[in-house]
Image 1 (cartoon, rainbow, N blue to C red):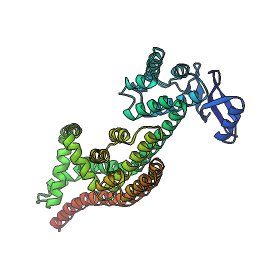
Image 2: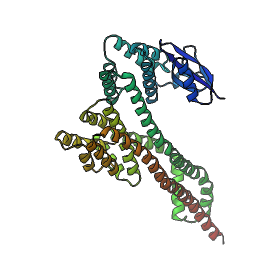
Image 3: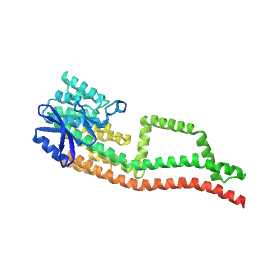
Length: 413
């Protein structure tokens, strides 16, 4: 049976670390609970070692310069889940924060947790301590915690929050994974063309020059491009770098972001995919807020800040205004024309039946699956298009060289 390494906490707050043989992780969880331990982390023991402080680390000590200087999303998710586990095990908040600080994977996380613990011990509520660190904790995160404090169920609320963050992470990762292969194809295309122009084409230049005959236009163009890339590659890299910096700087302007996001939504296939990704995130985030006692109006204002598409986010301003006027939520959302019709109809049904929170959760689940299907459709078109473009580009370069060689053959005859 595989060997698992675990980290768990007892009801007294003591952290236990060890190894167990089991068929799967569920068996480890059951065995730890039989011992009165609440599991915090379970992983395969292969390639992992326990540091003296109790922190799980790789056998090869990770070099400090590879550590993130800030708190990453994955680290925040791990802290949220582990804090929920400790609170549900009955530990006090300051004790739970102290334990997590001692187990922090990086100095940035340890410093953050120590500061939060000090604020809590100083009399601040957890939500107030988090709100003072907006560079790490979003308004959504802070309001969920505030709702849990008001309801007296902070452990359960933190667990729901961690689940929501996990689902959003899975959604992001699915999109990123889908883009790996197309990105590799683009890189192969760029490298292949560069090799042809910089190393292959020059082999024919001297031969063409000795022929003393005017080259065909395609051959001449390829030769000139090859000369430029060899002589001014540094200028090409510099211009590319400046263009990327200019494009990113321009993207920070609201009007430019609005224009770009609108164009992306109108693109075939890609626009449908982006709209579904935003809808899934929007529905899950709003469902989580409503489940924890946040009002619909406040929830929509918070959700707007979590959305990445400016056009879809700004459309919520009109929805909020009509909701204040008593015109409901589902119908104004449908009237924006930006959210998928199925999603708006499901939300409308949930609103009319008094089960909006439940229906939003269903919308999120539906559009998680829709995103997977949309990614497959998008890649089914994108991958052949990229391969065909690569073939045409390289074939065009080779054909232009052959035209020059054939012209020399005619001269010899």
